Image (cartoon, rainbow, N blue to C red; front, side, top):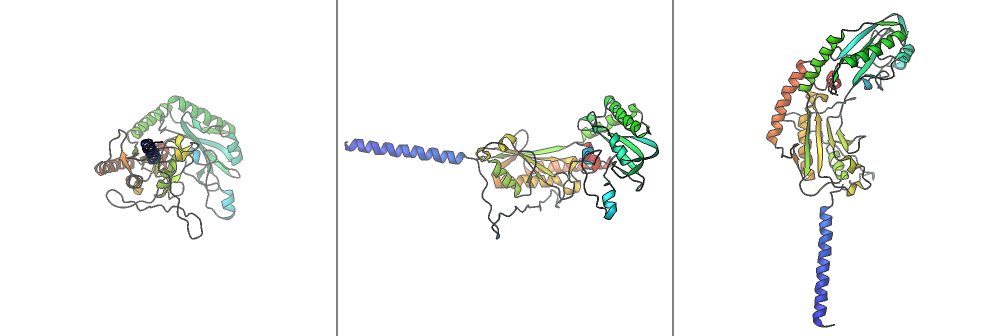
Length: 371
């Protein structure tokens, strides 16, 4: 082999090696960012991420608490599973928990009179199979003969009267005549089963009240979101989860969703963080590239005093810094601090209008209405 051939072979090998190296470098550069191993504690275990709960709010102050979306399905046997009554001794074992229930502000309520007390067992046996009238939650409460309090029917109790209720409006719209008729049928069947006599409000009046409440709710519903977009390198689901966990988010039961949890029992999550659920369920999620995640706030669900929008802004800014991303709106336009301040001002006006209607953000009534 001549010197020229040897030189050409060496040059060709160098070029090939360079191409291979560049290809490997490019592939590595384009891989999504992955979570980094957490440092081990003194006991050899990985310490839980300590959430940073000291977010500053627009206009000053900090917040601590969040809420959980309620509904009749969360309110015990006739509505859903209950919690801990907190009563002591025999009373704790025998008395059902008092839950926030029917509210004349947002419910149609039909009283049911009885000639004699009815046992909790009989009331439970007479409950309808479903807890909805159309798209509206339906509920029944009994007046406990011992406590003289309205509560969900429970075994080993006796009730001197009952009241049936259906919600006037929710995010699916206002109660209509068909749904009201279904409510009447369910309530009448319950009353017949326990030997009671119901008294129903005028249907047209209640439907008109439902329409007005629905119009108010539609005009004062606010669900805000920010999109965090990767600037250069994409993210893996694990990297997103690790970054969000460092500022207090926890995984939810829904793939691709995390929440900033409430600090108060029964509270709805203050914020949500979501990304592609298919990526979260991929066979090898760490090889899946994400370029966007969404931060969301359901305004009526969270107390005003928690200043959740301030927490949302601080969370978005913190994630943008740590993940090398930018904050954009639904149209892909970058959101700057001035826009956040304007939204905060408009939210204060919305909070005022909800307060005036006795539907303060984060209250039980508001959380039921805006659900």
